[in-house]
Amino acid sequence: MTGDPEHVEAVIIGGGHAGLTMSYSLSQLGREHVILERGRVGERWRSERWDSFHFQFPNWTIELPGYKYVCEDPDAFAPGHEIVRFLHNYAALINAPMRCGVTVTSLEQGSRAGRYLIHTQVGAIEATNVVIATGPFQRPAIPPVSAQVPPDLFQVHSSKYRNSDQLPSGAVLVVGAGSSGGQIAEELIESGRQVYLSVGRHPRVPRRYRGRDYGWWSSAMGILDQTLDTLPSLEAKNWPLPLLTGVSGGHDLDLRRMAADGVTLLGHLQSVAGNTLIIAPDLKETLARADVWFTDFKKLVDDYVTKTGMDIPPKESQPVEGVAEPKEVSNLILELDLKTAGITSIVWATGFRNDFGWVKLPLFNDTGEPVHRRGVTGFPGIYFLGLRWLYKRKSFFLIMAGPAEDAAYIAEHIKTTGKPD
Ligand SMILES: Cc1cc2nc3c(=O)[nH]c(=O)nc-3n(C[C@H](O)[C@H](O)[C@H](O)COP(=O)(O)OP(=O)(O)OC[C@H]3O[C@@H](n4cnc5c(N)ncnc54)[C@H](O)[C@@H]3O)c2cc1C
Image (cartoon, rainbow, N blue to C red; front, top):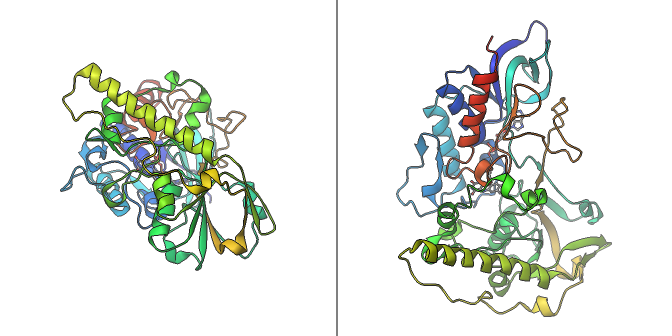
């Protein structure tokens, strides 16, 4: 590319709900900006979720600034394509200045201080302000043990998994029992597959308790508004998200129930030796730790109800273990022969990593995490939005207009500190 780069006052990188929310806030203040999106609006909801995916919170929670999801049943759970439609409509409603199909390949210092150069495959843009809104879940994190897996096994990360038909016939090993792994294991067993589920740390929570959804309680009790500075440790930022599903009207993702339905539960996958999976002896402890989350959450609700005097159904006295302990808990599987088990594919539901290799500015700490305070970095005019715990627990969620407060804060920062050209 030749010639002077285009100049725009503010560039938002990423056209997910965080990028759109930022656009809304900048428009409210009349600030010129564009959104660069490598795919389409809400691309990750289009191409990085499986076919049967449903939003994990009830419809009434789906909201962005100035726009609520309109539907027949506020307590139902929207399928993934409805989330895409919601974001598409929102972009149109706020007249978001989208440039789709534009991948940012690098962000670097511009021609002079306070100017930044954004390279894309279709040319360069110089900007005074840049908001990086490329998502909290960027690149599949597949553990190194995957390299030890025999080459004839089919392997796929949850973000590329679509449905059971994508996998070769035979049994499936799902690694990771967070919401992705739990939901995928559930749909695979329902489609008639033999399923092995390697269980890691997961906060178990009730879908509904005392007549209200988990999302309702989280909102009412202020859990979604909890701020980063109140966390017991910085490590707590990376605690796994609660095990939830919105499929079939929403229900508990209870691993013991899934075991009763035919899923074989395993501990952590430690290594693979030839055709043998080596499994850690930690299944019992992992399930027990998840039960503590479950019990603690219900106690939190009970205390809240007592404190506020809410008039709702009484405590539900179902035991923590709703169904019997699976046989694998007392009779641990520590080695599993892939051939004997008939396992032909592995779904890695093992989460995501950051992918900021294209950012050529020293904005990161030793572990590669962006350094910022409420999205504001040490580089004047460079901001992050939509990260987990950017400021509050809800900062990265689509529910309750998650990033709206952060976007408004950044827009105000741009207004008061920026130098419009
Ligand atoms: C399996 C799964 C289920 C989830 N379920 C829920 C749920 O039920 N409810 C909920 O509230 N949240 C849910 N989340 C979380 C939610 O998906 C994310 O919080 C949300 O997508 C974040 O929005 P965002 O705009 O910050 O990022 P993203 O949606 O990731 O958007 C970032 C955008 O940036 C674009 N981009 C990235 N790099 C570049 C580049 N270099 N140049 C140009 N564009 C780029 C991407 O294409 C993408 O469109 C779920 C997440 C996962 C993984």
